Image (cartoon, rainbow, N blue to C red; front, side, top):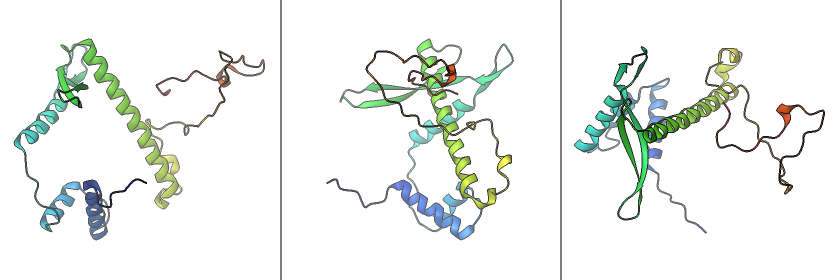
Length: 194
């Protein structure tokens, strides 16, 4: 039998403080106000600041905000990041975020960066769609206003779970004469259709 840790994680402590702040103050809130409330009430010690970590965070934020106008008139990022994994001397798998200039980066860096961004956008789209559907189905404030919640990121219909039995015949079965092409099974692909 596996043991379960009874200690709360750092996130769970922070979630409790967010809930406490919301219960005391009500309504929407800014995280800056929650942080100030935590420090004012000595609920957590002041964080020790590592100057390299702070400067690294500031550099990353500045790099993300750096834009320029290209020859076609589009405003684009000057510097693009890609997460690269490597194995260190101890055999541990380490992920490094490598930054490079948009007009000078290698093809490999570009493909890695843009495919990672595509995956992030797809995950955000699915999560946002779930959040909207959850709000509409479970929040009484949404009653009668469902038609106002039509956003470009939302899926047209919830994704269906399709189960098919796989036979060892070696290929896709031929569709019956009365079955439309859209109803035929498709091979499994890595990417979800948009």
